[in-house]
Image (cartoon, rainbow, N blue to C red; front, side, top):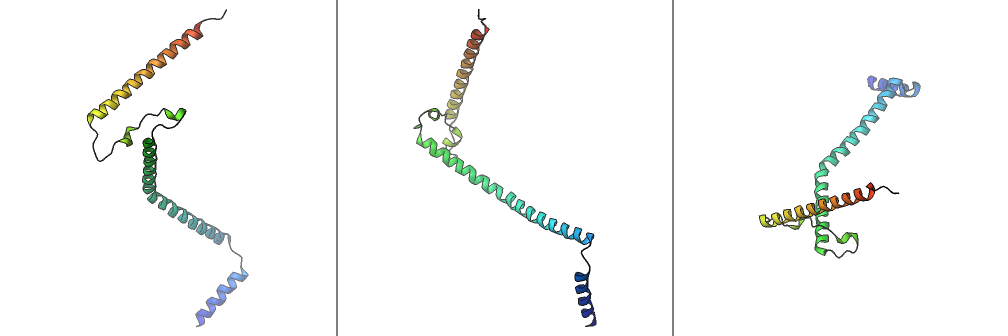
Length: 136
């Protein structure tokens, strides 16, 4: 009993009589900063754990949007009307795509690339002829 009364009197006296020392203030600030950093770390850890789920949901949503737009066709007017099909999502993953379909896609891609290269060469030749002439 004697010790309890002394400890109460001493602790009550200390809090009222002496101000907080710089060491105690620094310790208190460090404890607050540690608490803040722990909450931020927990928040980031939760985000890291949820990231694969969020990424999968976004990929699924993008796939659904693409399939919905692909099913709609080219009803758009203007610049959106010319669209190349994206073969990544058009074929069902459960059934394998025949090599003939993949080969035809590759041939179409090669032909389109060749046409674009020829078009670029023609544009460069026209620009060279037009800009190389001197105006008198």
